[in-house]
Length: 261
Ligand code: CAA
Image 1 (cartoon, rainbow, N blue to C red):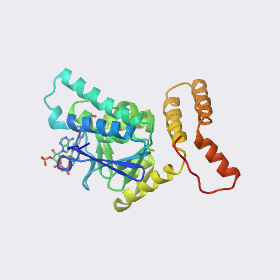
Image 2 (cartoon, rainbow, N blue to C red):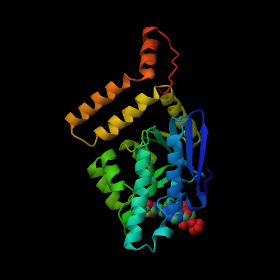
Image 3 (cartoon, protein in one colour):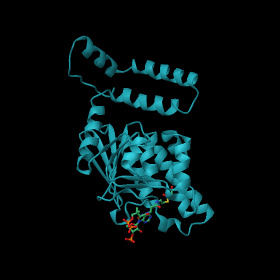
Image 4 (cartoon, helix red, strand yellow):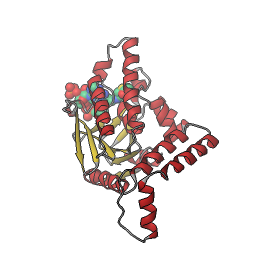
């Protein structure tokens, strides 16, 4: 499918989704959000793609937020609709049955920080900047920021960042656990691709079920979460890849042929 504001490239099992409005620092207008949704649907239906990397076009921004020009004159109903759209798209990323890594190459503010938080893992370049500047614009974060930031960095730190609208650098984001790793800008895509390839060497169904177990388990009580893990663990034994993974170990075979079955 052809898109106007995003680029989707598929290479060796990895889907590279680039938010592509560099003149507006990749700000998310409704059209871009809808295109991200379509691209995620396409990735979801493509059995060849087993991991996703999301990044921003240009050398300045990952995504500098939801589009302020579009939001400026919105009514209550339009504002609510825009929030629902952003949340629907980001939830589709979060629940996609494939691992998603954010390659944060620059500004990740407001909706940009929220997009990165809907991904499973965030790797940042030293140039990345994170923040939820919404209260400075007279609004709350609207694409999941009030919910995912406290889940990632703890309630007190999330409240400090959201109430103050302070923008932090990549090292501080790393220190508070918002990003997994910080690398030099020129090493970012290589590093993220290497991580995706590392994941791709494993059984895709097992990775998918781990994502489900972690995401669903973190929202429920420990006893229900443990039962969920037991159920998903059991499910693995219906797969050819479990037989292959364990046979390879027993046969002392390094090469494994996982088939996503
Ligand atoms: N929406 C619309 N346009 C944006 C934008 C945004 N979020 N961020 C940047 N742009 C546009 C600018 O208007 C500018 O366009 P023009 O050249 O046509 O004037 C272009 O991108 C370049 O931006 P700047 O000239 O401002 O670049 P800078 O280097 O001086 O500053 C910046 C960079 C600090 C990121 C600054 O652009 C900025 O503060 N952007 C807004 C950040 C923000 O507040 N994001 C949160 C939005 S609200 C939100 O996301 C709500 C939600 O949760 C759903």
